[in-house]
Image (cartoon, rainbow, N blue to C red; front, side, top):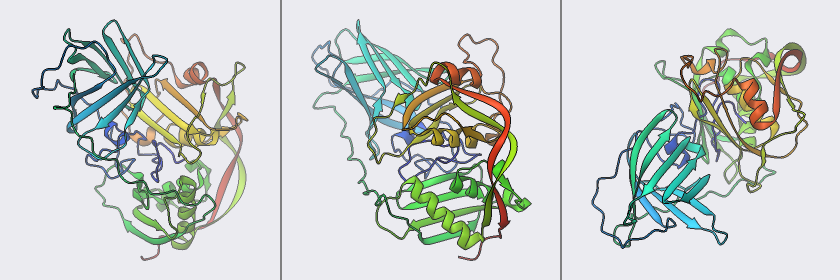
Length: 421
């Protein structure tokens, strides 16, 4: 998995060190705001304030059931018409899906839905949102507080009727995945110097048009080989300063997986940057990931076999909220060392398979340096999460130890500035 990202990867990959892997609310639903990436290329965290829907709604017969279609206006950069469909299973449990009525997108599964005593509670992990609302006596509206990160705002959802229900656009057509045993190369590849005034950086794009923006060769190698920059030995200084925008299209049909995109990038590094290296081991400061005595507390992924992993931060600042889906332990390690830490992370868990988990902690000044965060200690809050070393043990049953250890490295024998397109 690429570092820092976010996220769900169709052909989008997690962002590198100076892009926050934060799937943004709109991005998680496929909403195109002002960004290009399923990972946006210059990622920022959207902090929505939610206001009540003011459009008139046709009167509905008084109802008390919650399993129905509800809709309201949500400003996410601009106003979006949001639809929440709540269904009741035979066992009485509730399942909810969140739709965008203004963009062709796939619905977002709401993690937890409860309704008791006229009060609805929704937990939307991917957006770091909770919504708690009371139903009106006539059963037509839900009035409550939408809380994202440290911002709480009022929002009203109204019960849709046949006359008032918003039409939901069909989701975008799905490109079939590339054959699992395919090893694509870049049929078309362009490399251009980045705009000197460009901010942020990122990896991702459409299923058959993988892009990077404002990325150094150091970033590209780290992404392609899933290594930390400190694992690159003999790197010339320009590798960390010269920045490039890259577009690659595969020469084989289908949507490439993250593994296949990384293979394409490795071939591009050889053909256009003249990369030559040999593997070695060096002793250096690293974090070693192991399992606590109580065992892991993660959830086994139930995703389909071809579903990509995701690693993203719905919230990032004085508090870090991380969501991991369908990830191996190597994916988790690569994401942590790419986005969070100032040194490599070594996987010694021995855990196989793919997992889901969430992690909340309070970062210190050594973490997320690539994002240039201005962290301010919060001393007056009562719900401040613990440091990551405590959080990772308590919340997911793993353990991080800082120690000197032998780490795999790439010793660069040759590299050069890219050849012309």
